[in-house]
Length: 108
Image (cartoon, rainbow, N blue to C red; front, side, top):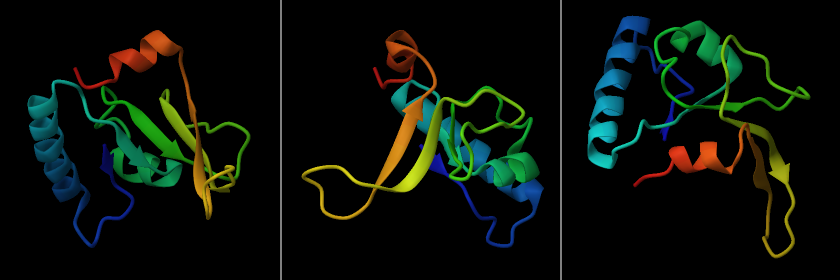
């Protein structure tokens, strides 16, 4: 998974090019398309249309269901969940699909 939430001052062209290099290398190494993790505003501003063929994990806390210009595969809807047996807060996520769709994302 590639977590991209900041540009660190690079241009959109530089960001897209650097992401493509990393995504291509990861896909070749693992045999599956890497998942891109980001927020909706960052995706729409920087990434939209460039990576539509990659699975998307969207972090969006202030909604009942994220709405962006494409399908998302995972939705992180909270970063402050509580689970018995775990100290501290945990992320809560939803997968947008069935077990067969999930299996297609796994490293083989």
